[in-house]
Structures are given as structure tokens and as C-alpha cells.
Length: 352
Image (cartoon, rainbow, N blue to C red; front, top):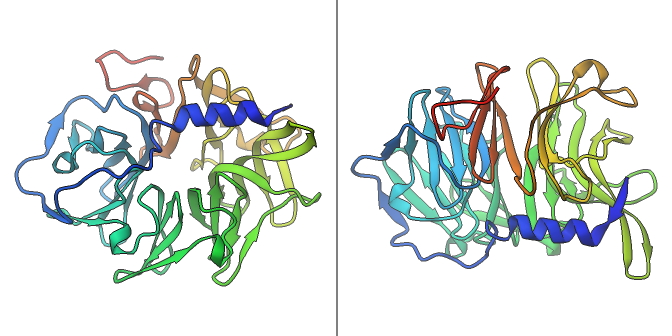
């Protein structure tokens, strides 16, 4: 299905405007000691949750805008960032040493070693203070996708990449490293990958680039999956785009579905999970969907809608926890699906 680009862009602007403001929030100090007790509650956050991760101990890490970064140990939620104030948290990463990194869309990045916070902004070399994605590569280098380019941090200093260095767009949405070591960058413009020397825009057989990519994932077979759009035609002021979920096998790009994909994971059974808009123009409900492994490469894959929202009830990042449960964020908190029941952690009752 092909829709007008204007509708799609307007929708994305309205969805993300509250979480992507670039005005920097004032912070007290560059280094903050985490003394005293963190806030602990039996209930999850009620603000937008963009990303959900899991640490090495099996705890669930939840980045909630204006609420904080939470750690769920299976019994209660602990807000790890109460000392930092009300910031627009967007992503969280535990590095190989067990330290935590918190991305904000208004105040740069925070590093937390369990005892104190270290604050990194443009004053310290970060390319931009609106940080959308954090990724650790095979060498232990931390990469930050921002609203002004990409920053590479080796533990001592920052190296920045922008369109001047060949990056396709400075407005980064996501970063993913594949098995070969290449880094893939989703952007609000054209998406690209980096082989350590050169940035390359990935295009289909017709030479058309993929735009507005918010999610990229590599499955166990080495296939790259992503959600994005292609500009198919331009007629005056009208731009026709093709939006949906795509896969790339190293030589060919294949469109899997017209549905949007703001987040993508592969579970341990080989099924593909996505969150995204049901309609390709981004309007209407959003759904958590599971694409069955057995039919992934058929012309019409079997898809199961696990949860469908109404209106603009956006669904966000996805995680498969160690116990096989699926966690996913939303505009109003975090959910867990155990295969039968969806829990929202806002009340005692759950939804089947």
C-alpha cells in the first residue's frame, strides 16, 4: 500500500515531539554521588517507555521519559535516576563491565558505575545533547546516535561523525552492529552502514534509499530486518512512499509487510516480533505483532496480533527476557507478555 509522505511525516512529528526536544536541561554537576536510597515502588512507570533492556543479572531495565530509568528485579521497580531529576530518558545500556549508560533527549548521556554518575554533554566532546541510541561494539567502544551525528567514545575521548565525514544524515534514531562488524545506522533521513572506513547508504535494486528507519535487527541467519520507507514517486507537491517491514539477505531487499516497525527482535524460537502502526501512513492503532518462523519467507507470512492499541497509543521497544517473556514499551508505561497474559504493572489485574 502506498500513502502520501506528508501524512506519515506529520504523524511522526506529533508522536515524537514530546520526547525529542533539543533544549538542554540544566543539571547540577558533571559528577553526582548516588548516596542515599533509590525510590522503590511496586508499580511501573506511567510515562513513555521507549526502550527496555536486560542486565547480566536478569533484571529488566526500563528507560521512561520524565520518570527515570527503572530496574525491575521481579518483585519491585527501583528508580536509578532520582538524583538526576526530570529528564527525557530514551535509552539504557549495560556495558561489558556492568556499568550503565543512560541516554536523554535533552541533556546528553549519563554514566553510572553503581556509586556515582558522570555526565557527558557537548562540553565534553559529545556531538549533540539529544541522544537517541547507545550501542557497545565488539571492542567495547560505546557509540551514541544523536540529533547531530554519531559519537564514538573509547573511554577517554570522543570521535564524532557527521555528514561531513560521510554519514547519510545527522539525525540518528538507532544503531546496530552485525556479525561482520559493520555498524548500521537508522536515521530520519537515509539509512546507512559503516565498515570502519566508509559510510554507505543502503538502497534497493532500483537505487532508492530507505528513509526514516527507526529499527534495525540482525537475525540468527545474518539477515538484516528493519522498518522504513522508500520514496516511490514524486508528482508535484505529492510524494508517494512505500512504508513497511523489510529484510536484506546481503544482496536483495524484500518487503515483508506494509505494517510499520518501530522496534524489531527475533526470539529464541526464530519468530520475529515488531511494534508499529497497523496502517502504513502511521495513523490509527499500533500493534505488538509476532511473525511465525515457519512462514517468514512466504509471500504472506503468518502474523499474530498480541496487543492492539486504539488511536495513537504508540508501542515502542521490545525485549525477550531470559524466561521467554516479551517486554515492550508504550506511551503510558511498560508491558510484559508471558504467552498468555499481558501485565501493565499499573494495577493488580492483568489482561489476557
